Length: 416
Image 1 (cartoon, helix red, strand yellow):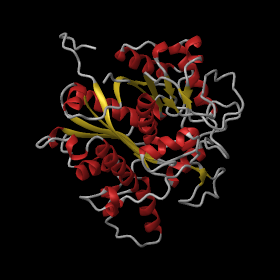
Image 2 (cartoon, rainbow, N blue to C red):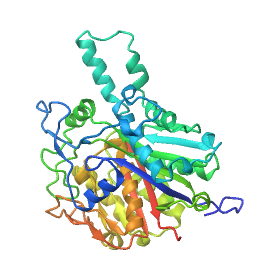
Image 3 (spheres, rainbow, N blue to C red):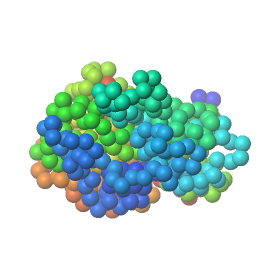
Image 4 (cartoon, rainbow, N blue to C red):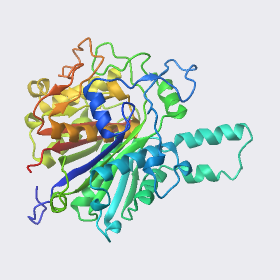
């Protein structure tokens, strides 16, 4: 790909990954659990789910934020920020730690994060305290901790990244939106290194919202299965370190994959319902493929949005058939890790980005578990129940969100 003036564009690569998920408190344990088909969905523990039709949730277990903080006190930030800092710290350490940011380069090191809900637990605590008349009415805690920008600001302060700092609340596509924004910042030379990802914490507010929509599965999350009945809310965070290929090679960094192309679109149709012909989702995929100069038949694996709701999975299938063509898409592995980790909201596509980068590096793809009954409306190879070893040259991560927000990111192998 070249700029309008004919100058070659510098490839952007992933050199560090970090994740905290319902099946693992780091990227490696998450990867191993997903390949093993381990399910992180269980009865909700953080609050009493009895009032709801379902009691299923995907929560992070046994998480201690303290080891990931060296400058700030983790008790002074919300849970989503704690998860985000942990993922960012692991990603930065994986990329070479302090060696990933050269002396005097802090102002060229940026952060961009995505989220759906920000820090909703702070609203819940504020509300509960007000009801119990236990709160200083100044509300200082909620003012400093609740705004979504607190997540990226906390990462920047903890890591000492003094470059551009952006928070993108693009709902369940926010992680991919953040990666696309970081990609652009590096391409235009506004930054030398970027931390990009997404984070969301499990909360009653989010759970109640999806429960009111009737979208939560009562037992298992079964993406693309004919008996699927809904999604399962989850929580987590994931961050990738991005930099130019030449910079990564100059410092001897391990390179996972190239960000080959990004596509963003909006259905401009409905606040919660996807376009009935999958138009926006198809546009995002096409845009990413075009930017990367990759043909659909050259995509080795698709990490689907795959929420497990009847409508979402059907419309995503329609969009995939539109872009790839039915013959090609039927032989392209398409799986949903949400069957194992639930829907982690703004963290979802960031976690899936980590998995795509690892898939490209390790030539394995995770399965869609709980798959028993094929659905004629979801004519896909959904990698049922068992992980698969195959050459992964190009992996596509798809994310779709309320508001009609769509984002696709392509990961490609890098010749060493």
